[in-house]
Length: 119
Image (tube, rainbow, N blue to C red; front, top):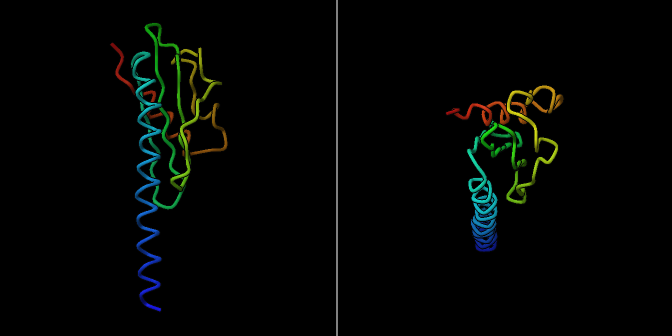
């Protein structure tokens, strides 16, 4: 019985490693595409047992959102998705509490992504 539990724990651990690596690879590809489009601001919400949120925004020379991505979730199955409702908006128009009125984690991540140094 103990051998079965050890085998099960080992399989779960290896699965976590493989799926985590797959998730990181997908995020890195999406982030590389963003970086090729302009200055990028990245924000990540904190929290240990809440779904974490990562938001990245690519800005053009006029400080308009050219492209974006959001990755939100607790598991390795969270995938980067575009935030297309922000595309074309100017940095000055982006208000985290208006865009995400009911999601504090998304508000925090967007606030951090907007703190990209200008210049």
